[in-house]
Length: 408
Length: 231
Image 1 (cartoon, rainbow over the protein chains, first blue to last red):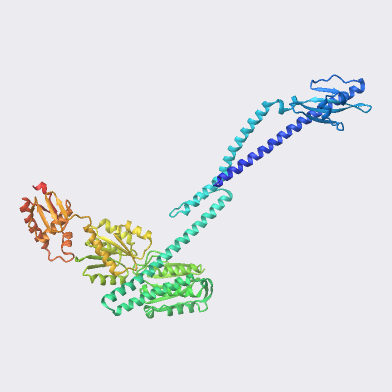
Image 2: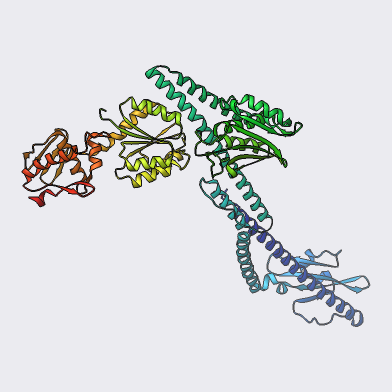
């Protein structure tokens, strides 16, 4: 099929509709012309027949006829043979079609005493079809012009109708190409709503894709770093033999990888969608125990959290979130102490810090000056909080490092 | 490769740094460390390194910026090998466009890293003819001989290498630090050793050319005069 786009399809439909409507109305006009023409002739003959009948009743003969195309006959027998053969005696009027260009109408005349005469009219001269070809030419020319105008208007209308859709489609095609920042067009009415809705969806999708890309990239980084240490350790052990320091490096790297893998699996599992009321103080205590951080053993940990405080969350993920925060504090705190405070509906992890970053370290790949990792710890925290629809911010004022979790 | 390389490692992960240092030092190479971008740039601009191993995820600045800054400002541009966990094609493309000479993704093999360092250092001799010619002065870099108007010059081994450096730098001067680094790496024998060798070289050249050929550029180094102008 040659129609390959909505523009052509709309154009064809509009032209077809225009042509169809024009043809129907032309046909109706032609039919109306024939009906009117027929009615006029019929009415004229009726008047003439009535006049003849009245005259015959008074005078006993036919009056002289005013028009040359009329002929009157006192009976059917005096009519031409071809007329006798085509007249139906049972009908009072009718038409006689002949093989040549002539055309006849007849009327039965009531002459009294059961006798019938006939009025015969050769009306071919009165027929528009036969004797007014100029009118037909004009009709045809006007018809062609009307069709041309209709097609022109159809093209314009189809453009008016289809152009917004084409603009929308073109923008969507550009958006599908990588590294383009094309915005969908501002359109009117329902298409405007559709365009806005699509733009919003695209923006959301792009944001999510960006986040996923950043997350995947950074998790990949975070796994690659300990893997590098492990691989390097193997080469060095091969080269110069095993020393005790290697064990510490291997242990630290595997724990780091294990923790990241745990968080990733926890985030990926469907059961993490199941949330339940979690007692925060119990979860915090368990997190301290499961942090497996040697530094944390020498930490003073102060809880200022109500014993009965519960938050709706997935217990596994919440545990990992707390472990991340404790490990982060163990690694970077200026003093071996951390306070966990619940105030104004917010849970705050507060520790002193010597090196306070002036960047948002909850973002992927961002880390403090003395961070050995690649800044993934707090990004994972942020990611888990996002999973719960919680909000995480970092406050670094007054030489303190505070991670503020807002579960609202 | 017999030559000792001078390597700068710009990497914030202390463990990886120690491992790299331990392995590369085993090759008798000279290793310097920088745990952040600022120190890395400072060292790279103050010293001459054969290869810089550059991590991209540094705490104070992105490694790409560090690479661009070193390439832009270093007097003797070092080869930069990016060693990073950023493994996508886009990351590599950005890295190379920032001026990296090579790119290695973590986790890498230490042995491969060492081979790449050697290869990068060797690249300096790529596209160089065996014979260097400056008007009527001809140097055969393999035979380590120099001739003027077909007459063999009487040069010491170090004298030949200094002349080779001056011809390579011609018409620009070669800095004392650069010549010293090329001759002795990071451990020049004594402060006047270069002067002594230049003196000996001058004697040989001046005798053959009949005029002073090596010009001292104040506070910079030495420059070779155009031989035909001398003649």
